[in-house]
Image (cartoon, rainbow, N blue to C red):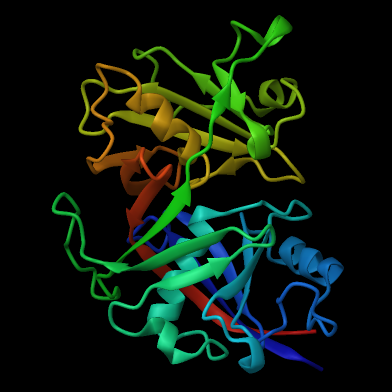
Length: 306
């Protein structure tokens, strides 16, 4: 019976009970390469594992095969049956696992000091990540069971488009092009998302959106806006800390004159789900990228048998 190691890492937190969990399953080199004739795990098996772990995301990662080693790691994501195009928290968690040397099938060169880890998604998007210095505003109190490292990755920003018809006026915008299944709902500044009960059936009635973000400006707090994100597919509800949703929200809030979210300046942002998460974000308008920086916490590790 084949066995595979696995890890559970919480992204964007220093807490074992906070942030967004990601299950990480390393696979043999070359097994996730496009059009590989001998996949170690087929898609139905990956989906079954995602359902079995019942976590927000499961990540499969593999180094390239030695004969075509381009230095880029292939990565796949599943939220139950749903395969996200990109998953920021999954890649941040995987980056931590690589730097700690916890993925035996990934060559150590990817975890070298100051080395940049590059991931290739199923759609061919290349994402860079690496260990970085901790932000000056971060809480550096060591809990005695953490490496103290911060990790950063760059994600391409996504445009938004205005809604039409009966949806116009009810919601702010939806994602454009490849993220049309993302919906943004912006609340008044006097709303309070943290600790609030969200009536999920009302979100399900909105329409065929996979990801719905609720957010509002926070002029009286240390962060420019706050948010909660819900992934309404295949039984997943709240997405505790969603990196990809920030590829829409960050450029949107940077356009507000009164917002502290300014291009080229790193700001602290908090996602206020019950688990909570801390992100340090920089918008690079010229490159069309956002840089997400945060901690990750190893929560569990083991071995699965198929």
